[in-house]
Image: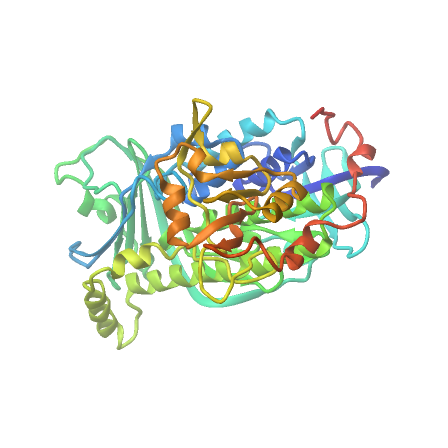
Length: 527
């Protein structure tokens, strides 16, 4: 084994899927260098994830690939629940303009997304992607740099990292290294997934259909101009040709022009890791949670992990943030991940109806519940509930904006039209509905940010209306656009800031491990 004691890198990322590469891009935007180790040389060529929401599109914007992703994405209408005869029981309509400034549901092809992300990575000198590398060991040291051993064509090697992000999937070596196990949320089913390319007149409502039939539960969606996906639960000993399975969606006379891009089997599971971190070793994405695909949130949850963690890690590595800031990654993300998984499991049971004597009763109750006015709209908005009160979310007696996301309208500044986040940048932000007082101005100065009046941003009134509805004179936004603190209407400026302020600032010097990193691992850059 080659051990280079001088080889010290700020961040090692294990796995170059969408979560790992997005994490690297988000770190690079904050000046943090990283090395990604990936077993495979290229992008996995077959489709897997196919859906995302507006919050995650905002994350891709933050990673610098918003426009590139827009070119490969296809807005979708939302989700329908169908009975066994394909009659609509409920419709969860999604709009083309969500809170985050994008369509609430978008379809895409994962290999295309991965190519977009890797192209962006190649343009960032802060990042290095090394394919054909297998990580063989991670020392989750709680003190000092983390030891990482890996194997490539040249043999065995070892280096040190200030932090390790395990984006290495369900069979994660990183999860094993931190001693984490699975919490089983009690859902496991075998399904077959079929991706098809055809120009046939496929019956489609430009959204996702879930067929709630215990004999043959199915999912159907249009992914691209001529791309479609079907998923069917497998029955023991029952094999059917692809054309027979998808026949209800095809014209009766359809012949030829029907290419099966992929047909494979998956076991859908619902699990969450009981531990997400030891020291500066973290797990993200499928390494931390497994979500059944019924609400299209598997990849979305992983990208939310990356967004939540990277700004905090950058704060600790570069800006003197307290180590305890990193504790909030698991405390904020795990409850949300568990919530999403339970929603997906509930949808799965709605589709399959279970396989016991009460299945028919549950299906009738589902159909009745779907007819309750407003219920489907409420359910459709519950994919990303507010963060609960914690060190980085201060909530008063009255429930308000704290813990929720700030909307992202188009704004106009100095005659230039842009999305709000592009104006705010990558750090904290203060938005005000009134003239800021001295203490608020001082707070903004201490964080190195400006206090911006929403009346000066030239939007369509979205931000002012949002703050009025939340009875807020000012809000403090985290880098991930979550409201951290609120000045209530007519109230004093931000108060009781000690909890989060102590996490954002310490007296120690931030680690500058990159100064010892060899060029073979990290290319030099100027910022």
